[in-house]
Amino acid sequence: MNYEERDTYGMYKGNLVGGSGVIVRQGPGPELMGADTLIGNDVYNLKNEDLGDIKEIMLDMRTGRVSYAVLSFGGFLGMGEKLFAVPWTALKLDTQNKRFTLNVDKERLESAPGFDQDSWPNMADPSWEKIIHDYYGTKPYTGDVIV
Image (cartoon, rainbow, N blue to C red):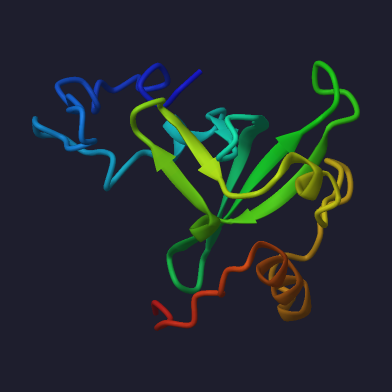
């Protein structure tokens, strides 16, 4: 299900995406979107391969920024699936197809640092954060802390 189908408040109704990806009507999205509408969205790579879907969005409570999307990949009916924390900056919203893209080959994702639902990593650990950002070629946010 995509973000428009998850929109229980109707906040995306009236948004019309033109051929160039430009919003021609008012309302939130795609610059500002509800977190609830993003969970469950599909993630594809640039080869149009299905990489899974977003299971959770992790917020950095010190900065107020989205740090990671937890991506589910593999398994069958939720059994045996592997979870991956993907830096938010590695994901791009594809408004044409109403999904996210991640510039990673399927094989590379299969060997990415991941975890299962019963054993989440300490995502606040700077050494874990470095491993994840190095893997996806992104940089952690180093801006101001919200007080």
